[in-house]
Length: 523
Image 1 (cartoon, rainbow, N blue to C red):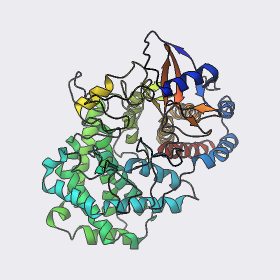
Image 2 (image 1 turned 60 degrees about the vertical axis):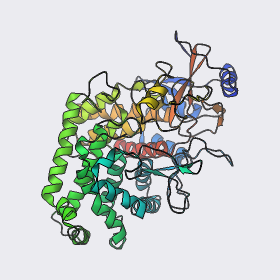
Image 3 (image 1 turned 180 degrees about the horizontal axis):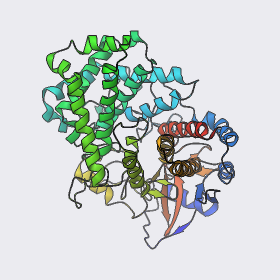
Image 4 (image 1 turned 90 degrees about the horizontal axis):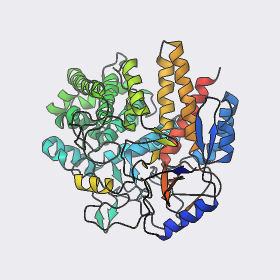
């Protein structure tokens, strides 16, 4: 796809730049298809372009699922985890460190595995492996030190960790030059997502009663007290994008949702064996722990979290409680989708959920969704510029949680070339949730129509034959990228997949979207 621009930024002619330049001069990168829904869909794969121009029926969606199944399959490593991206690097070291284990990404993969009858065993294995990581002595020590001294919660390395080396026998941090990589682990969204999934798995009896071991329950016991001590409903964290700490609606929502799930498990009127096991352990801990697990205490924490979410939505979105010229101020952010999926936050009205999607909709672009406007990560020519050596400029995939690092990377952004991410799949799930729950038949039709468009846009990102990623490397066909990147060559703009291809979170999201969509439109 070719776009003209008055904003011309030509990097030094690196070898990667030359490879990309040669490629776009001789190859077609994408095509635009007009779908029956009246939408223009950018497609990188010719076969998918053929699907997109047809009306989706249960039979066609099933055919698409069958064709994509081998490419959307996610495999666990020997320790039971999933690397963020399984890039085909053969024996090369992955300099992006996307072979690390992110808790957030792994939980989304868990949900993707769970919806597949053939994947439930792996889903269980993955979730228990994540719980066991949280039950390690090092991770428990981090929870305890924050509980003992909440002031440490502003120390990103002191907080419980959300990213580690899955190939390490002891599950240590990712190492750089023999030392743990400095990373902003202030991410309560990841904790909330994991503890929500664990609670739901227990509720669905996916986890056996004898798997509620003392070691696993030991870290669970600390979790609500940890949230209470840091005042999670007013806490600034790095959020899903792991950048400058701000008071993120999405993070507070996920923490709140996790407490809702555990309140139900503890105090639903079912008197199950699981409930007895939980109460026998959790309510017999120290006074601080047993008190925080009481129903009034959980109710109070949930109220505080939900109240913050509602206030911030009324103010406009993700982190609106700052002056507009503060770099922490943000309205539209794709992370807001977690208010609705994968586990809907109870207490939101339909109007509030629809407002959330309208906010996110402002981030729609031709080939995907922005994380937020002026997002400099993987912006135009991100991978083909000469490496920066300035003190405050982060490495390509390094930590940008300091103000200087964040602004340093932002200063390199070519305007209006932000990466366009895979979030259409997640928006399929959100729209279909609204279609299931609304009582208005016209709104239901609109939701299914919107979900169809999102699904086709998500499919459009899948790579085709003979394609190149935005760093000048070849990429196999039928791969799900993290995002679509812009390259600016001699003043003209082209779209290419991110080098972070395939991304396992993207594969899981598309699997979930296809499965849910087929179920929704089937008679």
